[in-house]
Each structure stands twice: as structure tokens, then as C-alpha cells.
Length: 314
Image (cartoon, rainbow, N blue to C red; front, side):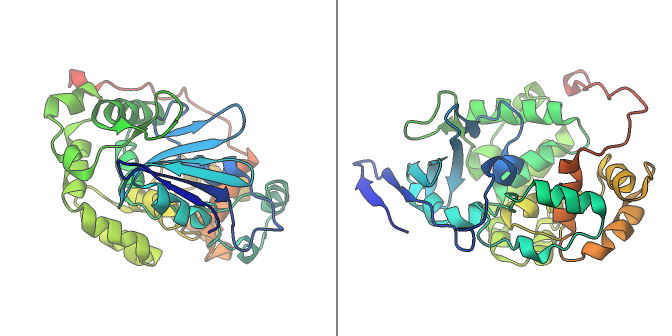
């Protein structure tokens, strides 16, 4: 990658240059759509979009913490993990994704696909940073999970290196996750089952990170060896870490009904029905599901939204 290097005395490096994304030079790229799944709520301390349109990410890489800023046609990175982040920038922006493999077979998907030509599936190459927030999202509202992630990262992470926007943090390292006291999990509104799953995963973090280099089905099997990580969590993780176009999420409270309503007018669809409806998109089922979500066609709400719980009162 073309760019410049300016080593710092602390081994922190700053590197920048043009963003080469093989296969996308003549194709549109929508940063918001592509990187949006990495953002865990509007106040995610590891993700920020600034008024100039730049996307900032704070990540813990194998080389250490790093901050990445992606602008229009150029990018910069800081910290010990800065070079790692820039070296893998093309994959992050979907260079390893092939949108042409998707063939719309429903009018809704055809229209949405045409309206969203800049959608590409990201591949972070990092497992834990997607796995832990996915575990936090198990069996609770997204609002609850986002709050837990925000509280834990701010308390146990570290400020993002470089000139990152104020309030950005790199998530804790694996060892730190294993040492969070039980009462701090409760303060962050995380029950014992989810916190225990995160601790078990953090203890075998090195083995789980290897899954980023596996084919998605094998990666999911590796993750699901950890008690507490099931099909929902493994799919949500590898969609981001591995850029998996076919790993559709099952076990979700809402997705089957949304897919069923969009493709068959059936708001009561279950996982089995959803997979049947997505069968024509074998190899691209996750992309099909994302396009359905982006279409905005969702079944009308029948009941009030479930109120967030407070596990500190259990």
C-alpha cells in the first residue's frame, strides 16, 4: 500500500495514503452501509463518524491498540496497531467481497440492491471485538446491550491512540476481560450467564482469533466450542470478522418475521421458514437478509416494545 511512515518513540506509528480497494476502483462504496454493522449503538466508544464524513475506529489488533480514520479516498492510522489496520483496510472495506455473486430473485431485493450499490460486506479479521458485544446482545434489547458495551469499554479499555475524537476507547484486552469483578458486570447490567461466556471466550482468545482465517462454517464451529456461544452469536460474529455472505443469523427474535413478511407476507415465519425463503440465495443468504433489512419493509408492530430489564435487581 502506498503511504508514508513516521515512527514515534513509543513504537506508535502514523501511516496514511490513498485507499486501494482491489475490485472497487470503478464501483461505488458506501462507508456507512459497509462499516455500519461494526457500530454498537450511536454512542459506541470504539466507533465514530465525524461531521466531515470520516469514519473512526478504535481496535485492539494482534500488534496492539490502534485508531483508524477513513476519509474520502484516504486513510490514516495511529498506535501500535496502526500498520496492522491499514494493511487490512481493503478487506475491511469489502475488497474480498463479491457483490456480483448476488442475483436478486424477488422484486423487493432487486429494487433494494439497485438502490444500495455501495453495500459491501466488511471483514475485520478480528474475532473478539465482534464476539463480545454479540454475547452482550444475547436475550436482551439492543439498547441494554449497547449500554453494557459502552460502560465496560469506557471503564476497562484505554483511550484510543492518536488524535481520535474525544471519548473514543480501545476495548479491553483478553486478560482484562477475565479479571472484571462480578459486581462490575452487574453495574454494567450484564447477568452471570453472559459474563461467564465472555470470560470463557477471553481465556481462549488466541484460539478464537484463529477463526478469522478459517472458512465461515469452520469458524462458527470453533466459536461454538465455547459454552454459551450458540448459532446466533457465532453467525453475528463471523459476519463481521470473516465477511461471511452466507452465514444468516438464526435464533433471532425478529429476523424470521421480517424475512417472512418481506418475501412471503408471513409475519409469523420461524427459522425453518426463513431458511426456506432464503434458499434461492444459497451462498448469499446473509447479504439477502441485509438487503431485506435495508428495504425498510417490516411487519407492523402488534405489541409494545419490550421494556429493558435491570439485572441488578435479580
